[in-house]
Image (cartoon, rainbow, N blue to C red):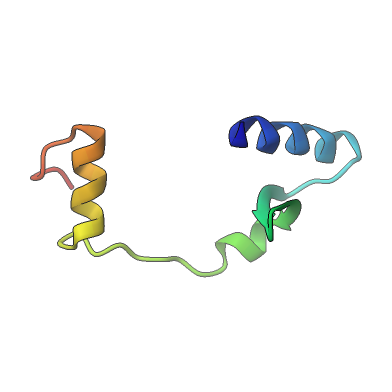
Length: 66
């Protein structure tokens, strides 16, 4: 359902002539976000941390994979 909403709004944004944007949800509403605002700062994941091991476990990848 969430992915369907993203796709729906992405298509409608493109049909209205918008470019260089991504669709996201803020405060439970779909919004158009400039790609530059989304990518201006990178988040880093600790590859030794619990979050990364959870990702590897849930996707069935070996823990040695990086």
